[in-house]
Image (tube, rainbow, N blue to C red; front, side, top):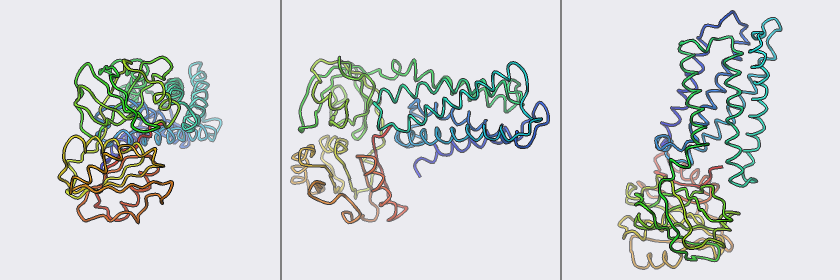
Length: 414
């Protein structure tokens, strides 16, 4: 499993939190239910520390999880899991016998009230975030920023209402302060410094080419060369009046590093406006590259599967060099107007004996399924396209053999 380092990091962190709370010495004797409530509450604040840390798009974490799409999958899972811990912690507190309730001081009373506010804040913001497909990307990002508020309230609640002295330099106190500081700094970094520190490559739109009725290819000339590998993608910010300035992910469809090309298909409000309104000389900023599609490291026998605009990483690789792997490409699209670079692909297949291409127009043909594929022994599979397609086909390929080498990208970060 290529994500084992990331999963191991999450498991070790949560297990460490559980053990440290379970074996810590409380200020006074506490009821077993109260002890369990503290353990669960500790898991909640540890879980949100991981949520904020994973949101930083750290290159190390990207490698550990083998791609940002996996990082964001676990980011979402941990947010839901941590919310569950918050609710369970509250329920357990209500089950503690009255005489065993938490400390009764002005600070602890305020901490209890702020803890309730944190709970409601987490519930409201995470529930809204789960309906991401109904939100504009910028609104979704704003909601994520607000999570810092209930997190801060939750930390205050933990420090001033707990029956464990978290201010002491005990293993639990040290673990809690480290995770609290890193979690808070991660959130503040994304709020205040990320945009300036990570978008170091600035550039200008120097070319606009329609590659289909609903897709445009932008040539971007950068102020400094971008080192990337064919198959990778970037986060792009466009500084043009009327266009959303939030960064969006796009595959690099070609270029020499000094000038790069990105292909943008009209799939939503932002990409539609880019297709219709983008202008020459528009200033942009780039972060990245990201992505782990590495065709050179695959086996000699390779199967490529592309859906819609997911053809761009394959197109980028093909136009950069003549391939010598034996490649069979399955390109699925909805209607001929959405078949990007079809003539190029057909011409490439006609002139390279190592390359075969199959065009699947889902308006007239069945969607891709297991009947389309024959997977040779010792072969590599590369997929890029809509998340549902990638998930469905990945499950199918894994059912054939645990030894299948599967590599994929799917742009779903909400």
